Image (cartoon, rainbow, N blue to C red; front, side, top):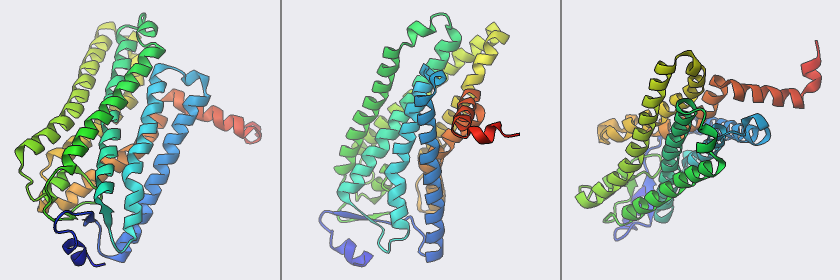
Amino acid sequence: MSPKSLQQGNLSSPTMFLLLGFSSTYRAQVTLCLCFSLIYLVTVLGNLLIVTLIWLDAHLHSPMYFFLGHLSFLDICYSSVTLPKILGDSLSPQKTISFVGCITQIYFFLCFGGSECILLAAMAYDRYLAIYQPLHYPALMSKKMCHCLVAISWLSGSFSSLIQAFLTACLPFCGSNMVDHLFCEIPFLLKASCNPNALLNKAALYALAGTIAMGSFLLTLVSYVHIIRAVLQKGAGTQRAFATCTSHLTVVTLFFGTGAIAYLVPHSSGSKDIDEVLALLYAIVTPMLNPIIYSLRNSEVKGAIGKALHKHCPAQSESP
């Protein structure tokens, strides 16, 4: 079925969307498929390594690494919402997704993304308590509190994304089924809608997304303001503790920075390539980089990796 006939067959209510964010040349599609396959492999293996190390190594059974384990699991889920579909479409002659599949992809993409925003804020709060109130830290950041913060992140992301997915499904498309993107995302569905300037719907969608993103960012920012103040006041005693924040601060900057730029840059026809690069950065590349950042900048994670290698390869490690 050709794109033209596909579009004409859904004039009343589109049951399928045609994704236009892919190159039309076969060589570019093969290159895209190979690159995305490598990125997805590194993302899944890297984050699985972090989860496994935290589960097996008793030295990593602390609140900070409890949150890190959930962050790695979220990153696997977050990239799995879009990458497998993109990989399948990269070599498929027909880049399509059903209407139900599109709304489902939007729901899970926003659910995992929103949950990650709140989880990053919880991790910043954990570091604030560890540095600002070290004597009361074990009582304040108890196992119950850790589970509560993780549950809040999951429930908030799920509830917000459910409302946004419902509002997106209610948009009038008037038979238009062309989505100028690699996957289903709200700004591009608003553009595909026959009434993209419907202020109430659009305001509700951006208000919900903004509440989750900006609220999490502000909580993270406030936590780090107090952390920096404590480091400056207490001096050398807290500088070593602040070193545990560098990995998290790098991940926060990468996640919120690319996401903010992607949603603040106008989605016009002249910026299509920029839109796709930004979408890839915060939806695909960031989950891949997170385990690399924590592995390279965190001495305890590097130590756990070294112990795991020593345990499973004793003969090689003991050889001269």
